[in-house]
Amino acid sequence: MAIIKEAVVATFPEIVRVIQNGADRIELNADLAAGGITPSKGMIAEAIKYVHDHDKEITVMIRPRGGNFVYNDIELKIMEADILEAQQLGADGVAFGALTDDNTLDEDAMENLIAAAGGMTITMHMAFDALDHEEQVHAIDWLTDHGVERILTHGGDLATPIEDNINHLKELLAHAANHIAILPGGGITSANYENIAKTLTVYQVHGTKIVD
Image 1: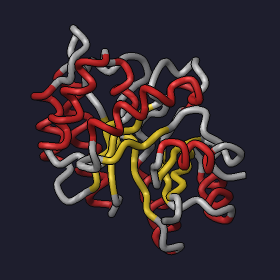
Image 2: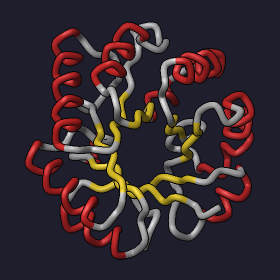
Image 3: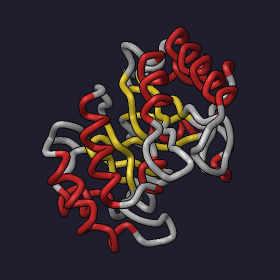
């Protein structure tokens, strides 16, 4: 099975470059220095048009700000509106995540965001990595039950090389048991993605340098 390479981008020239260089799916962001936030409406519209013209898929990051993943009611309203906007513009998928103050999945917020995303592919982004192991196991089950398609994870602190997190990623994959896709990311590049995909037996990978 061919490996799906999901390229993280924040500018239009980057979209053009990564598609020319073999990216299969785009994750569209703004402000990658902040870990990625929701891009502008104009950017989303032009990106979707270009990506679809080249028969590729596009996922839009839904995140109102950098920092933690604990959102107040206003921020969640903004996220819902941005999801509906991305849907209206024709995005294939959206990526989001919301946590509680005590570092568990914010199930109420997630239910509302999932409902807003009806018809689109949903990725739980790296907020997942802020959860402890026991809560991650619960989150995998909950997200599976609520129709989320993918969980983006580094398998540990982003400061660690992904190669150091292989065992934890394998545990997550074993628990997911093909009911939900585990999408490894963070430090995966054009140089190492094939080896990591083979080691983990996954068919999709994610990164800012996933293609040359």
